Length: 98
View 1 (cartoon, rainbow, N blue to C red):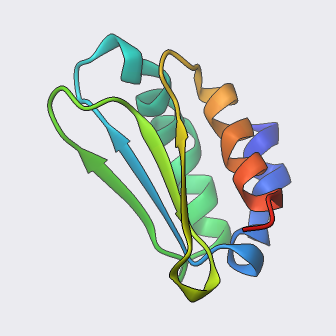
View 2 (cartoon, rainbow, N blue to C red; view 1 turned 90 degrees about the horizontal axis):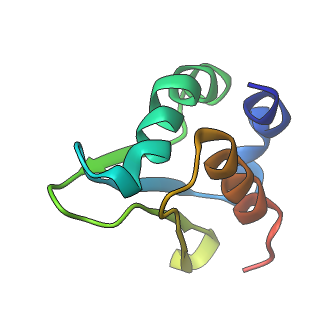
């Protein structure tokens, strides 16, 4: 949970949208599912107007997509990560200059 607090309201400063692609049952997506269960509500409460999209699709590899200003997008693979590692990838995306 420390990672969600660290991210806090910083999302809208650098990002325009977050999309999390994951499989509902796949082992590689377990950490992405745990991230949604543990971090989605605190992140959404801290950023109520910010679009955080969860996309579930059978058999898809877990991936974090972030959109920066001017439509620039970047993706981060989340295969076999735990929830904390997914949160760290999100922090990395926030701190990255597009």
